[in-house]
Each structure stands twice: as structure tokens, then as C-alpha cells.
Image (cartoon, rainbow, N blue to C red):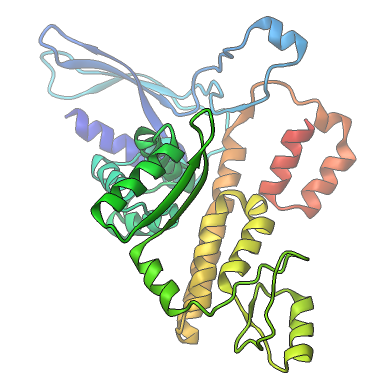
Amino acid sequence: MWDEVDNYFDEYSARNGFAIIKYRMERNGKGQIHKRTLVCEFSRTYKPKKSAEAALKGTQQNTKTKKLNCSWYINLFFPDQATQIGVTTFVNKHNHVLVPKTQKFATKYRAFTNEALNEISLMTKHGNLTLTVQRNLLKAQFSDLHFQDQNLANVIQKHKKADRINNDASALLTKLMQKKAEELRWIVNFELDKDNCLTRLFWMSPDQMDLWLRYYDIIVNDNTARTNQATNQTPIMMFTDADPALDVVIPIVFSKYAAHCIFHITHNLSKNLKSKLGENWDNFIKQFYQCHNTNSILCETADQIDSRLNDEKRCKQFYKYKQAITTNTAPVVGQDLFPVVTKLLDKYLTEPINNTIKTEMF
């Protein structure tokens, strides 16, 4: 019977734009639940963990909390001889906005099921799949599951930390020596200093050896001034990292055009965009490769663009949801001191960047 009550209040809260959580319960002598209190997700009061001394010195970090001391709650009672669950107290008041997207963004509805957690563990430990790939597979397999990228990233990191090896260098050397013992064609050379620390490591797999013997006449030029010894042979084909200067010079000197190396292009993308895109980097680089390698028709390209726009819209809705239902744990005086600056930030910057800058300022 309590399951029916839980289902009813889940539907009730979803219709009204908030989430309900179980706060307190009591059992009778038979171990059966006979009292239960349900509260709004934003009930209770935030209690800082830092000392009063830290707060006075101004060293207490200004974080956000969803504990808004909302007064909505309901007490349910199920007597031993009764056939129905009754309501003893009901306070239907909120001190925050009600958000229609609650079922998509509330913490209660963003929990992974045991089946989903098992799939994430399998894909992380044995498949080594990226966040973007895992997200797409989970959405295809569990269509009714609502979660944000950060939720998935947290679960993935837990599994990675559990399997993480303390010394990556020694683990790599050990693995290479094992491969050499299994296959004598492996080449592994290394040097250790007086403290037995690894200083140099070189290896070639059997496949790399075969490629080297086959393509020994290929010259790799890193374009670092006065470090390369070029030959007098005219190159048949040249690859660059899309450097504009090389694109201009090569046709003049060699009467041919250079092809652009996708490895170096992505390396430059990582160097210039990874820190700016943050957690969106994995999704961006995956779509970059899809765009580079795709032979799809225009309709498929349009579908990919629509999918990306929907993801951006969902992220923006989630950010607005968090801004609406959280509050600062300490007073923010910076916004009162710099009203003109905050107004300009709100006008010209996107919300994630705006939020990051305000956090640093205030």
C-alpha cells in the first residue's frame, strides 16, 4: 500500500513542479511502517561545516545549497487496524519557484538504476568508452532514465579511481616487458637513473617494425628551426598541421599543395580549445571527428545539428533550473559593489561563462 502512496505523490509532485522526498518514518511492533513524513526536496536548513572563525575571517567558501527551508510537508498515518492510509497534517506552501522540468533535473529523478550502474561499470572497466559514447548507449538502452553529464562523469571517475594504478610509469614498463617476453619481436629499451627512476623509454611493437621496414624512406619533419637535417630529395606528398604560412610557401617552393594532417589539427584544437570548452570538450571532439570522417547525406548532417542544438537547450534549461532552486550559503556582496559590471556580464556573456566569472569575482 505504501508503494501506491509513493507512486501517487511522485505523480503529484511532477504535475506541480517540485520533488518529494521521504524524511521520517516509524514502524510498529510488527516491523510495519505506520507513520511517514514526506517533505519538499528544498526543505531543511543549510548548516555550514566550517567554523565561525573562518566565517569571520572571510575564508569561508561561498557555495550554493538547495536547502531553502521550504515548509511543504505531509504526515501520513496507517493504524494497525485500519485499511487505508490517512493524512494527519498537510502544509501546502512553498517558498521557491515551481519548475515544470522537475522530473528531468531534480536530484531524486537523476539517480541511476542498478542495471544502469552495472552497464557503466562494464563500459568503463572493460570498454574504456568515453563519456559521450556511454551517454548515447545509456539513453538508447534506458530511455526513461534522466541524468546530466556531470552525474555520469562522477560515476565513471569512481570506477576509474578504483582501478587506477599508483605508478603509471612502472606499470607501463612492466606491461611492455611482459609483451616482449611473450613476443620476441617487441623492442623495448629503457634507462634508469641512480635512484632507479625511469628516465627514458623506447618501444616498437611487431606491427610498428613491419611498417618501419616497409616505409623506411618516409621523413617526418617537426618544423622546429635548426633541428632537422633535410635531404635534397623532392617530397612526393607533404602533410602539415594547417599552418597558414606553410600553405603559402609549399606551392611556391615545391609546386604542389600540402595535405592537412588530422592528428596535428586535433592537437592544436586540444591546445587552444580544451580548457575553454571544459566538460563539453569530449562531445565537441567526437562530433569533429564525425564531421571529418562522415560521408553522410545532408539530411543526416541536419539531424546531427538538431541533436547538438537539443543538447545545448537541455544544458541551458538545467542551468536555469539550478539557478532558480539554489541559494548562496554566504552573502554575496560583490554584486552590490559592482552593479554595472554584473549588468554587462549578464548582457554579453553566455550563462556558464558568466557564472564562472562571477564566482571568481565575488
